[in-house]
Length: 490
Image (tube, rainbow, N blue to C red; front, top):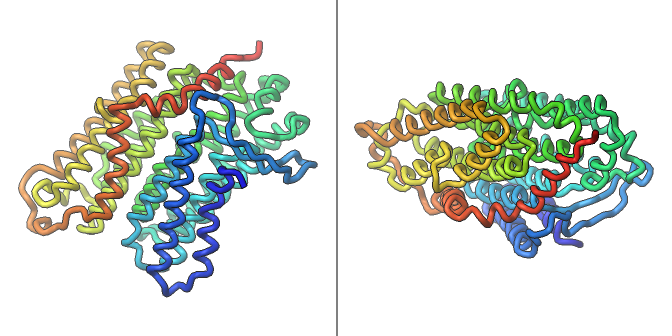
């Protein structure tokens, strides 16, 4: 068994162990879930250690035929685009489980679903075959449906149903595009990363455009882009806070990851649809930011801010340049750390106060100094403060945008000002003013909460001050992908 298979199947092995563990042994269940998530994280870190960041090739490839007639394979591999997402997925899963001690009902089912979700997410980022990719994409729907619908808030059933219907609707368009591609792709044996670019040279540009539009809808639901975002605010608000960490921190990145792959493989259509991508990106930034600014519910604010920040990812991709693609990849990682930390801290605060209304708080700095420090750092990072990983990502995207469109990037600046406005407002309301009587005895972060949040905050600051390691991890692959996009058929 190769290291990628070990990484992929480690959470599934944890599911098997949990399935045979008696439901009343709660400590054993939690311990097993933490054990397998930690082992998965350690395997991913070992993979990172032995990964050759100077090579743009798919590394540690594993290929076994599944259905030779259809050309499908059990094909795994990793490159500079998927490597950061793999690390992010395993890290956020471990953090989410650390934050799950507040879950007191159906604990066995909850931890089964979390490990199954991690299995599906890792499969998406490691798959090198379209059939396998699509299978893992659909696998993630099952545990997420139950995690929201069983352990969510008052409107959890509507939220889980919206999530599944939106995502399945997008998956239909993705499947249609895959079937259209298969007519050209079968002779190349159906592998995802190696043959699709060659196939695109033989596909008429009209078909490329239709296929890319199908993928844009399918991946755009998960990204999300306007107007396919309708499921996101309700799902974020109603999902348990540990699940919101995974939903915003890594599941949204599946859409961006898939879209980058198909843009590279359908370069003609990508150039034709570039104006549409730019419009959707800038509109999403402004739309999400304005809605976030209007919210009084802290989770709703972070949910809408995700639409705005993922618009930066789409904007970087739409520049079709190496700098822009690097900005998109960096923003995927930055948003994963920042949004994950925000949902974690908001969840920890809600556990102590049972309210998410920002107007119910004031001067928390006097009663929760550790929470105040971490929350302030994360909110400042969300507005792209220099010294945070968010600034590095946004700066790359801004440079690429100015080089491509010049004055149009004034809209980008407006989006950043909106982000700064609600971030600073939140800091002011939460941590200044008189202490409310109901908030005078709140416990500060305990050791587990401090560890979970501290891991993410350290990543935000470390990669903000020393971004070179993160940039070099993806640089070779991004350069190669950019060159492939520029090879536009004449």
